Amino acid sequence: MTRRSHLAKQTFFNLPEEKRNLIANAAIDEFAEYGFEASSINRIVANSGISKGSFYQYFEDKMDVFKYLMDVIAKEKSEYFLGKHPPSDHLDTFEYFRWMIKAGMEFNSAYPRLVQAISRVLLVEGLYYGKDFAEYHKMSTDGITMMIKQAVKNGELDPSVDIDLAVIIMETWTNAISTYILNEGMKQKDIMKWMRSAKTQEKIDKFLYVMEYGLRKTESQFSTNS
Amino acid sequence: MTRRSHLAKQTFFNLPEEKRNLIANAAIDEFAEYGFEASSINRIVANSGISKGSFYQYFEDKMDVFKYLMDVIAKEKSEYFLGKHPPSDHLDTFEYFRWMIKAGMEFNSAYPRLVQAISRVLLVEGLYYGKDFAEYHKMSTDGITMMIKQAVKNGELDPSVDIDLAVIIMETWTNAISTYILNEGMKQKDIMKWMRSAKTQEKIDKFLYVMEYGLRKTESQFSTNS
DNA sequence: TAGTCATGTGACCTGCTGGTCATATGACCA
DNA sequence: TGGTCATATGACCAGCAGGTCACATGACTA
Figure 1 (cartoon, rainbow over the protein chains, first blue to last red):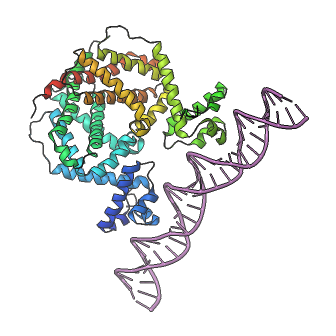
Figure 2: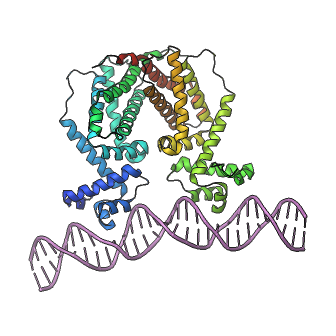
């Protein structure tokens, strides 16, 4: 049992919830404010009122705290999605994707600070595409790949579709929308209300339709091409 | 004349070209390898064989070297484009955009290391979207905005198009393609040859067609929408 | 009571950072 | 020759980073 590998030490989980949250929030604020590289453990301990020694009794290092936060968000998200169901059982792949993106955005609005911290590091700072998160990245890529294969199987996409390309496109869009909405949303005073407004929803729809129509219409063009 | 504001000091330009290149290359390697935040002036001076004091006689600070490199790339690029002309005078907006992207990619292949350094900092690390480069960013945004307005005027895009949205889409794509091609290209042994290969060109075409068809087809959808 | 053990602490370590400055060099000129 | 001036140098500075460790605390146990 020595190889729990990472993700916060047992001592951290023995702490009273209140203290755990204090530390987690200080870390969230730090990452949201400074990104990964520039964030400082010294500031995290100062802002959470614990000592440096304690910090290292809870976490291996900076990456360990960050991965702990990623774990928190993953758990919260899967819990959130358990209580959610698509509006219909007969959605096509793109309708399902659209529903998923929107539900994801709702989740983001519920945890704006945490999401901001994570996505600042992963997307803006670009760590998502580095080796530290290759594993997470692959999971997401695999999920999208499956969706696309399903879409081809269902006849929603031309079988000549370039799957790698389609994956990159969908991933790029998911991240671009997420970044865009988060940036705009952080300017609002009631992010959840703003997120649910017809105007915002329409904006997201437009983004996704551009992607969807592009993917649907293009691929068969490329059998012959000089 | 006291307010040259930034962009390397006169002493730097008095240096023999050889030495200037040595320093510039060391800086390029440093930024390409470590990004902006994590790159170290100590390493730059060590690798270029100059002393720390000299560095500060050539540049104000780290940002100053970086902006100098951006200036180099901007000048090289405009020189490069002076010798280039679209294949025809009667390209529609999207054809023109496509031509421009491809010519840009070609330029990137000619200066892969420099482009890699700059785009690592601006795109991957995300500084492009921060306040330090707001000026550059706005220039690019304005250019794209003009192109889109032209496309609407020419009847190539539905007048109901959401211009802000279209700009974001085109910008996102430009950057995504650029990042993708650069990453793939750096794996090749002859990047220029790879760049010019039919397969790579086709990949770029596909990317751009997805964007173009998406933009062309979608917008009129949104007059009525529940 | 004495001992044990998980938890907490902050002074301290090394290593690096960006940045300064008194001094040295050497080309050019009066 | 002696003086001037742009350039070059690297020891040095303060600051902060991540990380360690000898010691303090206090609850629980025998």
